[in-house]
Image 1 (tube, rainbow, N blue to C red):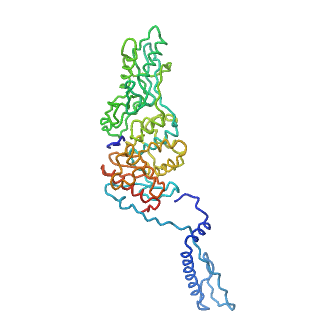
Image 2: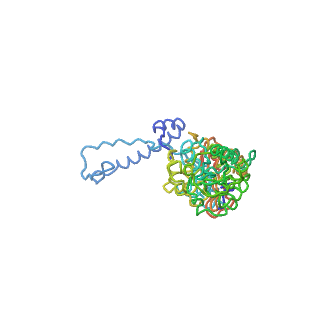
Image 3: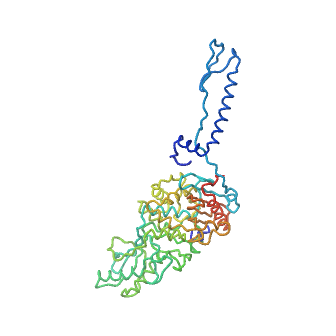
Length: 497
């Protein structure tokens, strides 16, 4: 949610055992020599006891998998069996000693779920219900960004078009999921700096319509078409209405201007109940300002119906939309990108299609999907979203590796104490981790979350996901910062307990 978000086994490939042992002996010759002597003494003692059994009494002989009873003494002395030599059974296991258990048990965190992974080895260093899908609020925007980069690519732009209507004097304004389209005058900037302007679209339309109909150049009616996905599928039943009235989230329609904000210059600003008509009215005004003969057209619902294209404007690249979405936790941008991902993946753009659409988009990253994965929305507003902390930590591992287009996503993560929704975080006991944690924040009424990448004090790169779930309040943010800072201090010495 916009800041604030809303009320609402190590990997295979271990070194050869012999090589590991040689290295271990080289490092600790005295300790291993003493260990071998002690083990040999125990084995010799055991052999002596066995050899001292009374001749003629029954005793067990044979292998470990079978045994036979020998009842008669042998005239010929039985040679002693070859004594087993002491060996090391496996590689030494590192004992990590830096514990964050007391901070993980902080009452401010409610029911903590979480995972910490060494990004260089893939080893899970710490976990609390790490495999269990849970709600993480706006951290889900990381999945939306990753899916958009995979399906759309960083250079993709969302389009808004105007086509000729079915009747003389009509034009159709056709939405393509670009919520950044701005009704502000040229020279003025909305929260989406550099966004396309209705004024430009209107000027193109007036000129193109007059050229196509020189004898009757007047545009009398604007038809609005938001059918890129079903415009009725605009509000999830699990969202509270307050997120719209306060101004954290608009209705999810493929046509709107300025994210449907009452004040386009403020991230948090009340939204309307009908963004589509509101966009149409703003376009009618822009047509008038662009010199449409006869004044302001009326506005009504309509469909493109194959009319000739008169005008088009395009959003900024997806890479910039993702940066804005992550840095300021913009819910409307995330919902738009999620629906466009669905459409461009061959689904219908519905909210119900997001789980399979995201699963298909995320699979190529090579992180095993949760069996219980649920993507209810693109913003994380719904408490019904379900993703495990370990999935987030593993995906952050891939993001930290910086392959393909993922540096775009990494660059959009807020940095502790410096940028975005973490600019004022990591104070007090957590201040030493400022600048060393890049992470996405999350908040709904029943969860506070943080997931990202830690450049630990010992030089190790760690990835993590923590969520405080249940009856929690704003103090959970402080507890999450303190826990994350402790992980920063522990680095690869972080204990599982």
